[in-house]
Each structure stands twice: as structure tokens, then as C-alpha cells.
Amino acid sequence: MEATKFLDAKGLACPMPIVRTKKAMEDLSSGDVLEIHTTDKGSKSDLTAWAKSGGHEILKEEQEADVFKFWIKKA
Amino acid sequence: MAKIMSTKELATKIVTGEATFILDVRNKDEFDNWKIEGGKVELLNEAYFNLLDGVDSITDKLPKDKDIIVVCAKGGSSEMIADMLEEAGFQNAYSLEGGMKAWSEHLEPVKIGDLKDGGSLYQFVRLGKGCLSYFIESNGEAAIIDTARMIDTYESFAAKKGLTIKHTIDTHLHADHISGGRRLAEKAGATYHLPPKDATEVTFDYTPVEEGNDITVGKTTVKVQPIYSPGHTIGSTSFIIDDTYLITGDILFVKSIGRPDLAGLAEDWVGDLRNTLYSKYKELSDDLIVLPAHYSFPEELGEGGRVAARLGDLYAKNSGLQVDDEDVFRKMVTENLPPQPNAYQEIRKTNMGKINPDLDEQKEMETGPNRCAVEG
Image 1: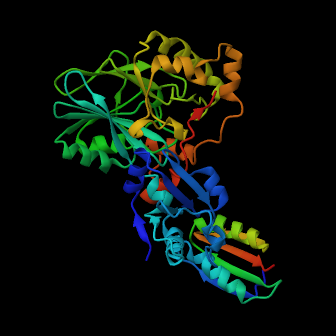
Image 2 (image 1 turned 135 degrees about the horizontal axis):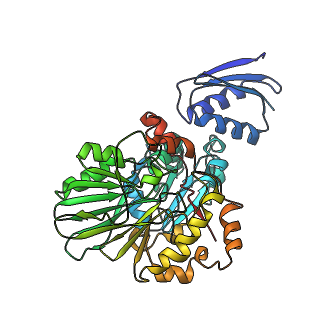
Image 3 (image 1 turned 90 degrees about the vertical axis):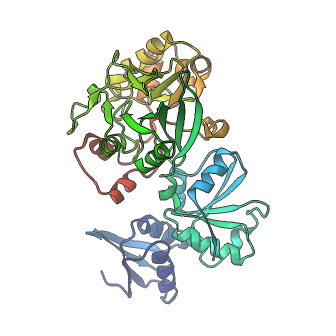
């Protein structure tokens, strides 16, 4: 999937994956897609809940070994 | 930097009934599934990711006159939010060290009473999961019933009192938490007892718990008397200690009764559960003090953190013991059951010795409440 920007949050513990995601989203325009990779298990449900509360759309998510990958479209 | 509160400090506040304000910053689903309860705890849930731009949205809901304990899953986000609260003028903000993961592991020992021939009985309350284990000491010896995974707590408790751990006993094969019974027995050179009917698939040696084979603790006669009481599992066994206390395992709780579905089909064991609760226990003295393996409701946590009730009082009050109609009872314990405990199949396999997850995996498996009860 084509992403406007890529954020590597692997190895970061909560709350950093969301803090970085939020910051990265601020630099994007509406409709842009951010691709995020994390390894923190808790980030999976938190990213989903955070995106929902901000009206962002999770286009796709997948897991490859220990890495969780997300594609989020900015509202 | 925010102040840190240990799980031990929080546990003391809860069991002593100190007014405690908890700001849980996990997401709503996680909070709704499992949270800190008991004593005089007041809760507010607001996810940390909604507070990244500032805590203004919640400041008017926060108390100024008591401690605010910020809680998250592992202790990282709570520290960040506690820092922000401190900057916003809340000098009473603390972050719970290690979050819910650490909270789930804390064991709080409370004394239940003295035994007739010397010695005493303690209840170890696992506030984070609602699990209860029992420590019997007499004449320099100790026996532990339903040992939790964190065996070092019992080891240091025994060492402080100069006791040798002689027996570890499980009332049944647990499905909600990983038993520390076998590991502690191996380490301490003690005997590990398990009901044989729950042990048909285990991969290790154990001593079968059977009616008639009393276990003696110390050289006096603290009698641990097994009573076969199936229903939660086919092997579930209760113990009468010192003719005074009835350890019920997951068969009978203070406000509810055990569920029969975690080790197979509820239909298979509902008859056993009915028979244990409505016949077998009824033959026992009403004056026995029931000591269960779990509690599910914060109000079950009594004075000083104790969870206990007189058997006769439970026959008068516990809703699971008031169902005269067998069909109604059957429906109650087989239909509309609460969700099963997290990873309960893997936990059972671990307790059988079939799988050996590493410590991090074990902690992950034990996340969440115990969920072993059905409310009548």
C-alpha cells in the first residue's frame, strides 16, 4: 500500500508509539496515509482507539512476526 | 518528575479502606474488561492518548485533597500523565509502578486466624486478579493451598517466620492463573498434591489428594482434610482445616458459585456442581468459615482485605445457593456465562506441564480478571 510517510516505532514502549504517530500525523494533510511499524503489543488496540477518536481511518493492519503494521489515513 | 507509587503501597490503601482516587489512562475497552477495584476506590478512565495536548479536559474531575494514582498497562503512559498532572499543579499525583501488569502480581498476606494447637492461617490476596491462596503454618512447618505463580512471596514469608514449606496443594487444575505449586514444591523439597481426577493429562509426578488421606502440618494436628467436591472441575477438592475453616477452591465463593465450563462442557458437570453445593456441603457444619480461591466483586473484600464467610450465612444469602429448581440451576450455570478467563486453555496446558511458556508469556496469559464465578 502506498504511504505518504513512514514511521518506524519498533522497539518503543507505550506511550511513545502513539506520541510519535500523533506528531507524524500533524505534519500530514487530510487524506495522506501514514504507515507505522510497532512492536509494542499494547499499541495495537491503542492505535485503533486513538485513530477512531480522531476520526482517522485505519486502511489496513497486518502482523509480520513480532511487528505490527498499520496504514492510517488522516481525517 | 512524577512520584511513583508501588503496588504494595496501593494494596495497603485498598485493604485498609483508605479513600483512593485512580485515574486509569488505558483505552476504554481495556478498562471495562479489567480494573482496580475494592476498598474505597474511586475510578476515572481517560485514555492517555486523549491527554497528549494537556490534561485540562479532566482537571475539574480530579481531587485536590487525596492522592491521585495514575494507572496504565505497564507504567510508561501513567508516568507521562502523572508528570503532566504535576506540572498542572497536582502535587498529589503518583504513577503506579509497573502498571496493571505489576498490579496483577501483587500478593497481600492477611491473617485469617490462629489455629487450635498453635500456628496460624493466612490468606494471600491477589488484588489484581481476585485470586486467593492460603498459607498454613504450625510448628515450624508450612503448607500452601492454591499457590500463585509468584512463589518468591511465599518463600520470603516462610523464611521470615523460620518455616519449612512441606506441602503445596492445589484444590483443582486452575484455568485462570498459572499454579506455582509444583515449582515451589520442587524448590523447597516439599510435596505437591493435586486431585487425581484433574491430573489425568499432567506430565509430572504428584501426590494424589484423596478423601481419607489427611495432610498434617507441623507435629501437632493441624488437619487438612480433603472433601471431594466436583463441579468446577471433575477433580475439585475442598479442605477442612483445623475443623474450623472450609477451603472451597472454585466451587463456592462469598457472593457467587463456581462455573462448570472451563475444563469441558458445562452440561457434563452441572450435576456434580449441584450435588456438591446442595447436598455435600449441606452435611458440613454451618459454623465452618468458607475461604474461597477467588472473589469477583469488590464488596466481597471484607475487613482488612479478608475474603471469608460463615457457611450457614452463605446458605441464607449467596444467590447461587437459593435455587430450589434443578432446571433453573442448570440454566443459570450453563447459559449466559461470562467470558472465559484470558488464555484459559493455554493456562490449563501450562498447569498440566504440557507447554512451558517463558515468564513474559506467562505474565501475558494471566492478564485480566479471574472470571471463574457464575452469579445466581
